[in-house]
Amino acid sequence: MVLAAILYGIGILLGLFVLELLLVALLPGFDLPPQPLKRAPGPAEEAAPAPASREDVRFFVGETALSAWLYLPEHVPPPYPCIVMGNGLGGTRDAGLEPYAVRFRDAGFAVLAFDYRYFGASEGEPRQLIWIPAQLEDWSAAVACARGVEEVDPARVALWGTSLAGGHVIVTAARDPAIACVAAQVPGMDGRASALASFRRMGVGRSVRMILHGQRDLVRSRLGLSPHRIPIVGRPGGIALIHAPEAFDSFAALAPEDYVNEACARIIIRGDKYRPIEYARHVRCPVLLQICDHDTLTPIRAAEETAAILGDLAEVKRYPLDHFAIYTGDGFELGVRDQVAFFRRHL
Image (cartoon, rainbow, N blue to C red; front, side, top):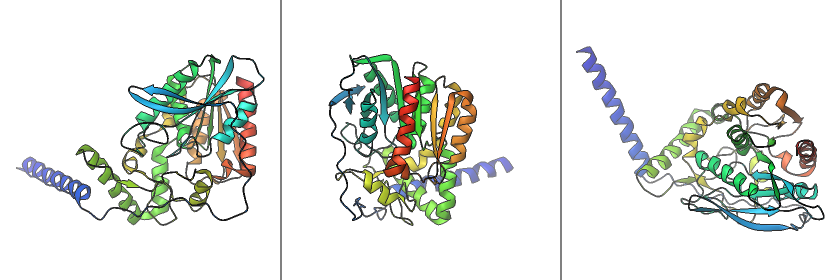
């Protein structure tokens, strides 16, 4: 009798949960107004360095074509060491990667900067889907593409990733022992720690709203319905994947004019399962970890613990900056100089 009552109660709870998921997935009222990124007014910016020697290339993951930019050094004979670059959460190759690529190219490195499937110039449906297993497959395919470039030395391929991709490069290097070295800038090493930090910032009410948006998109995907999207970056207090006080204007300064500021909301439900720190013990190459001391988006402790796991393979650089300040201005100069020096030592 007791067991039957327990099973009956569990059945009722499961039924209510399924009903909640269906209601969240199907009822109207969840759509959010678009939040296009607009640059803050200010003095005219200097033109970016001309992307000389940049080529458009494509490579495939299965039948899906991914787009990339290939930069080859000038006045230096091949074969070249090559740096494969990918952006962070919702980022595209034209959202801040080119200044790094140009500096690496000018230092004598080939560079392959690519768009993940579902984003930017790459193929894939639904659009704006951040799906971590797919992005890791894209990294492996990008490495294979770089190794296949005639002018590239396949034994000297390195990885550069920032934010979410700072974790991707650790996982990719753990799976591919032939990677020469890795640079991880403001790296996201522990999705669970990031989720807990986000919960503390947002509080219970807004966290529950975020989870409901994630549930709506995930269940709709299982039912074959259209995706439910939310802004990638938003103003503080709103619903968005990134909502740190400095995030909106900083992101707008990096993003191209046609940037699509939205993503399928299911990453809210899946992101906390991703823990690159668990792969660090399998990495066998040198790793540059660049930590910003005022970073509120990617937990600093997880990066520090990753460095401890890597031991002598880790080179840690710290900067008195927030998460986005390392992408522009003086922060960019500090970070990119350390990256160039690191790649010169190991490539």
